[in-house]
Image 1: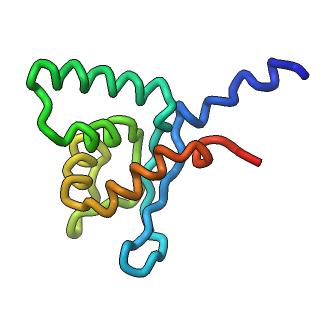
Image 2: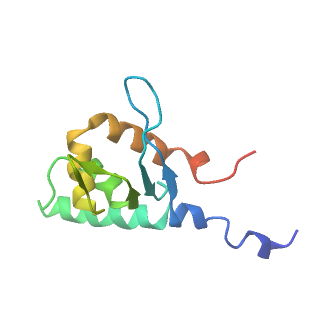
Length: 121
């Protein structure tokens, strides 16, 4: 076994995996995607630490878990509000996740499942 073969094994945890949400009424895939890091990533731990500090100072409202999930997203494709394409930002994703709890639930489950970030046999 050559350990050098495994140097980049955790890259997808850090660079993100593509999540495609599904319609909660008929379970069909939606024509959009969100690229997000794993709950085991360094980015997750960093965002978590910052939110805990902010919460202790009273700077974060009760939606800390939504802010944590939104904070580890790194991009999206084809997200619109009305006729306008929304630019990716953490604040925009927080707004969407607060308004669309079905999407938050799907995204949270995706982030927590290590199989979405590693090739498991």
